[in-house]
Each structure stands twice: as C-alpha cells, then as structure tokens.
Amino acid sequence: MNRKESVAIYTRVSTQAQDASAQESELRSYAGLRAWPIFKIYQDVESGATTARPALIALMKDVRQGKFDRVLTWKFDRISRSLRDLLSTLEEFKRLKIDFISATEGIDNSTPGGELAFQIFGAMAQFERTLIRERVMSGLAQAVKEGKKLGRPPIKTLTAEDIERIRADRISAGLSLRKLAKKFETSIWSVQQAISERNAA
Image (cartoon, rainbow, N blue to C red; front, top):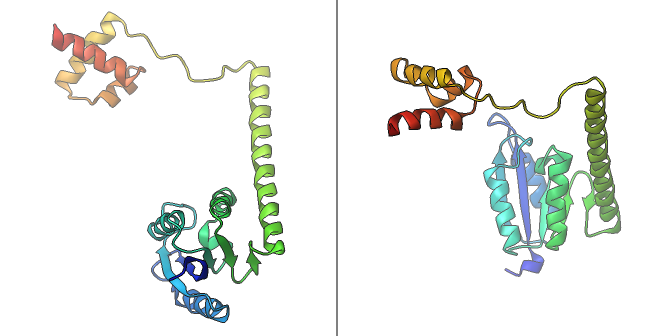
C-alpha cells in the first residue's frame, strides 16, 4: 500500500463498559468518502489523562516508521485530554509530515484552517506555561519575603549514638533502610553507610 494514500484510525474509550464501534464506523465512512485506504485501526480502552496507552504507543511507533501519512480520530481528546500532551503529539505529526484529522471538529492540519487551529492551540499552551511560571515565581518571592527557607531541609548528620541505635534497630526490629531513614530523619544512603561500617568492622 502506498504510504501517501493511507490513513491510520485511532479510537479510544475510557472503560470496557463503553463501545468504540460507533467511532470506528463513522471514521471508516469518513475515510471511505475521501478514498483513503485504511492502514490500520488502533484502539485503546484507557483514560485520556495518560499517554502510556498500548495502541497510542503502537500508533506513534508506526508514525515514526513512516507507514502512513494521515491520522484520523473522532475528537482531539481521543488523543489526549491534556493540552500539553496533545500539542506535543501534534508537533511530532507536523515534524514528520503526518496530517492529523479530527472528524467531528472539522480540523485537518493539511488545510489553512487546520493549521490556524494548530497555531491557536500552541499559543494557548504557551500562555498556560507562562501563567504557571509566573505563579511559581510569585509564590517563591512571597515565601522569601515572609522569611521562609526554600529548598529541601538539610540531611541530619548522624551522631555515634544514632549509628548505634540504627544498628540495634536493624538487628532487633528488622527495620528496612527506608524506615530507619525516616525514623532518624536522614537519608537511606547514610543509614546504609552506618550499617556497612558495622558489618565491615
């Protein structure tokens, strides 16, 4: 099949109780009306909050291998509910010269209108990042003004008494390194060193 004539269809529902057959049927018809041979249908039953979805991962792998030149889906949020993740995916499509079509929203980034929508999404994502950065900087400035110390608190330096108690707790109570570190307010590495020094002795 000629790559330049084929389309990949992506469908997603959030739970097993939902049915993707309506999406698939409409998308098949959409591709048929445009005489686009269907390369493959990728279907996920996963939340749109994550991009770690088997079918989406397979789709992106095939995108990078140049197996088709169009991706057709029901709505933008089938790809991702996160604007940032959606934009990242669309940017990769654009870089690889893959057309993206959202059937129900009438968006096709191979057309001027679709390209405009892509630019608007990008501007919105950049605006969101700017707002988040400004809120973070404002919060840090306020914390400094109020005399709060920023960053992680310093790791406690173990005394000889602490080291003996750590060794005793490790032997008698069988506490894990993590629990010992929490109990003595120090790092796991420091606990491990204290136990190792005893074993070496």
